[in-house]
Image (cartoon, rainbow, N blue to C red; front, side):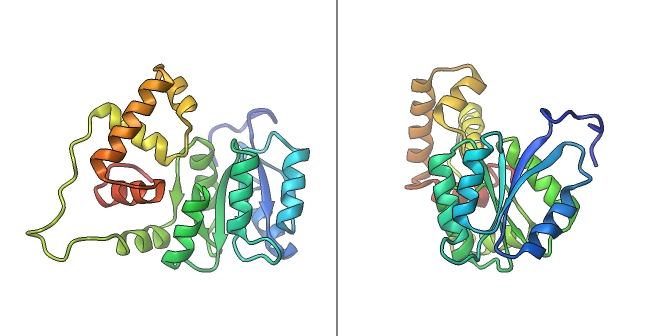
Length: 226
């Protein structure tokens, strides 16, 4: 529970729940129903239905998506949501936390990853963090990410983090939160051109070739908060 007990419908985070099992949908809805700063505005049993719901409910900020669905997988749906409704942040919900699945979600544009054994407190925390433009991975998922980073074999040859300026660290955190250049520029009161310059410098310094690679680098060197 938060202190925003009197949050209005406008203030509350609008959420879409997607799972092909109705029982799971109801269970997740129950976990969130007492959170005063959230409201489930729609539920869907398939990817296609989820996209229709987003069209009918453009106010949705966060979609909690089951990864294992027929016809359109959760990863495919995440990619479609980020393409057609880029303002919507996606939290993946899965029974598994293998590295390949987590990588797929990150590459598709997911902002969070939770296991289906999560509790209400953790789910609510994830929704708030993701709605605020940050990322969220529960402990097991975070451990899997860290275990699969390309850590050098010996301490003597350990890679040292490249020095980033305070502004570059700030922008790195926002990039990890999937903010666009325009969003970052508005948030930091700088031009998009300046953001793009910083962005290029960050990728060059870290020798990252993709957002996933950049996030892994940042995690390995504790440059961002999850």
